[in-house]
Image 1 (cartoon, rainbow, N blue to C red):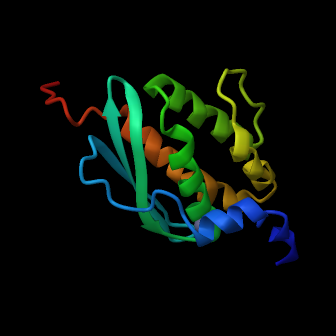
Image 2 (image 1 turned 90 degrees about the vertical axis):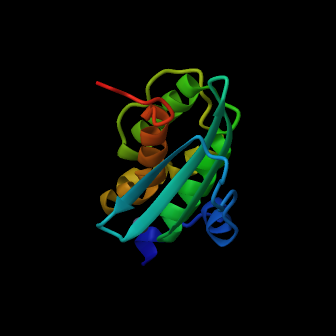
Length: 149
Ligand code: ZN
């Protein structure tokens, strides 16, 4: 377990203990579900989008400390961002935890930097990115528009 000690930093522990924005969003304009079968993590992300800006972001789900803390921090990070900024943040976060060179961009990762050690633990990368893949799916969906394509 000592290998993981570094992962469980104060911020991650705190967000696992007291997840922010962990509730169903009744007025959500978009939502998506994610599942990480390797660990058993499940998350549903709810977004309220107005004028191309994420005005609310919440999640529900259950999983390990990393996945819960990541979902909690993700909802804080995307709120107030435009759709493009939020998608860019997903790319940057994904690069950070997979150990790829972080793409240049204007989006400051801020607190999300605590996940930079996760790339050393390949089994945990999917826990950290689950909420982000899920929010990305919600950002890319256009379920409010009826498509005939
Ligand atoms: Zn997990």
